[in-house]
Image 1: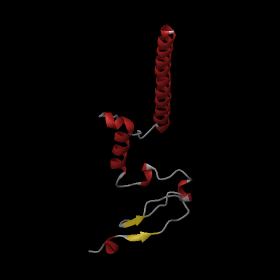
Image 2: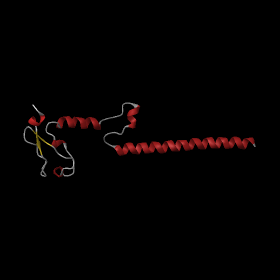
Image 3: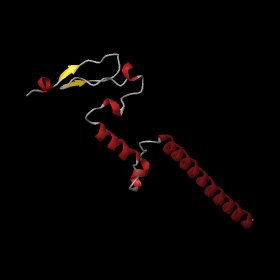
Image 4: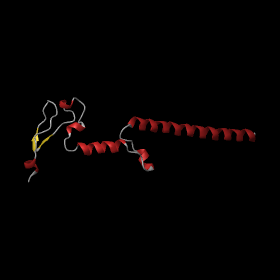
Length: 115
């Protein structure tokens, strides 16, 4: 059987997102006014709801396993990730400043001791 024979296209309607008739697919746009600007919710998916819920749970509990994973932003709190990167960058600049201050102080002390 052809895909077109199995499933017929059901156009979006501006009313609430109701499930399509049996054997039909309802295509919902992300910006559809029927979902009131929320985007698709789990309640909009009849057959894939358990799979999507499991995927969301696994994504929310994701933790870095290797050092390379530390450079990847998590799925939930990207603000915390970028704040941490910003803090690490400031810390590296501060450490470089302290090291250059120590080197400059030692060199000045050696030059003062020579004279």
